[in-house]
Length: 464
Image 1 (spheres, rainbow, N blue to C red):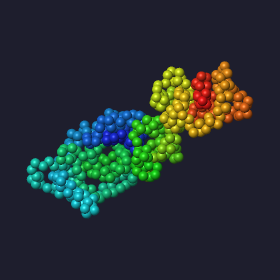
Image 2 (cartoon, one colour):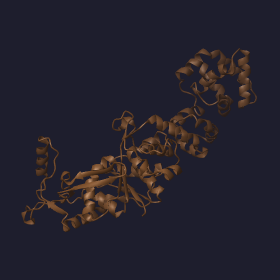
Image 3 (tube, one colour):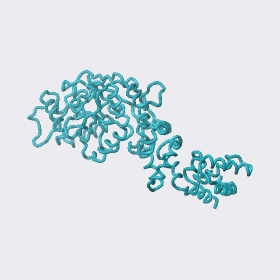
């Protein structure tokens, strides 16, 4: 049997982080088994589905590197097939027309609520004769659920769960306006796409019992189910924007690498011993349903930052330059010229070891291209208390004929000795003057890259 799984988002907004994790789990399961990862856009809710959201889903999955193996399916394009199955269920006696009006339905719901009960359709039209149908009223169509016994589903995460048929009413398959319902469409699409395993959030678990009745009525096999717990915030509450429940595009724009996001999401609800940094190859080799946990996982931005920092350090130079340059240019408000691009290439190996995100890297790299517009509190204090040292070392450096890191270091060392200062006592105020911060890469290399004129100008500008 060839494993076939699907990710089936509704295009009513961005591809959120929980959906991205579901897509990742499906993708890895397919790759582990040399199977197929499919994408179905469930866009039948035309009032809420948008082309922008569909585009965001495709772009988000592409950025994450989770590309489908076959052409994506739009659920709305299959409505004729959905209706065909409904008519088959009518013909086999597993479905029936229901002439309950929207007003009657609303009244029945209100009555149930007033009694403190959950509304369940009473099956009034279940066994009525066609002659009893009111004239000029378009019916909805309902599944004729079994009246006795129970239904047991075996879930790879939730275990075996049994529900009595008496707790499952005759669900609507097609509305009176001719639109098939979501629950019906999902079953038909999964069957026709040959889906063997359904891996999705456990908020869909209760739907599975209703969907299983459709499978049974059609004589189809229910796919293997795996309903994964949802992601919570670090405080244990339902994940929201304040916890980091943003679209995948937001994480891209905040400077996270796709491999870091994949690694982090993999560990939200799935584990492989104590392994934290897991390569793509390892993820594919190790991923299985047995590693899925039953408890909600907690989203932790600090851990995501830690993992992203690891992948920033490990990224190849040419790739990180390509990724970082747009962030730097956005931060400084202009494009880098050829000289500055070469400067960035030399500086990058150390810069990428110090940042957690590309945004942070851009902030830390900005001083290579623009003089500091303001100084941090610590930098300001260093400048204020060491103006004499800055003035003296400026004059000493001005006399240097050879401007390279070694010569700069020797000059600063000699000057420090002449005024009774260790090297750190000279370089810390220089760092503050040139970078605007109290922390930076080695200043000798920085000053060599900036050049003599720019370095001296920044030192002089800080003490004026």
